[in-house]
Length: 254
Ligand SMILES: Nc1ncnc2c1ncn2[C@@H]1O[C@H](COP(=O)(O)OP(=O)(O)OP(=O)(O)O)[C@@H](O)[C@H]1O
Image (cartoon, rainbow, N blue to C red):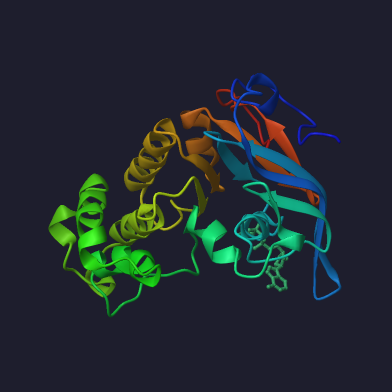
């Protein structure tokens, strides 16, 4: 079996460098074609281990969101194998999906906050859906909103929150079930650079505490500053790269 890694430059947390950590996501030779005609992934492979942090980059339309949705079990591959927390998605027993998904926190554009619920209620929602009672989650929700700097906005509803505040509520919601893996699709997309940096620092802190993270982004400045390994998606395939070097004239990589 071939690994993910067509190219690996200075990647200290690479699969090769850390064989002791469990593999939590493995894609092997995955193809995904929408509607039988639109081939987005072709022979895509990657390995993610516990505690890894990866930026996911690539041209618009390359399939970054599609790849994250595959890992979140929202799509099945057309060909190849997807394993998440050791389970083969193709042969997942009925009823196993919610349990797997609870181990994954997502910050996706289309999973918007519910406008009629407060910040507290939005963050609490995954716990309520999982059948946890108020006492079981209230403390965690308050702590999380405080951690993302929103203690003062607990009772505010999304229509009166700024873009950055909404992103941080969404991040808190993704974290409330203490996931082993966070998938964030352009989490800094609609916020100013200072807020974008703050959101990324929160993700990095979370990763430092042990959560694996994949962040899809077009923001190469951020990728360069934060110095993390990169999964690059292009022509349907994934390659793993080390941190971007300092900018050089005319440089145009991911
Ligand atoms: N549900 C779908 N049905 C059909 N085609 C789709 C679907 N979702 C995405 N696509 C197409 O698949 C391709 C990849 O889309 P995707 O959103 O995964 O790319 P992306 O790399 O995340 O793009 P961007 O950087 O612009 O957000 C695009 O051409 C898109 O139009």
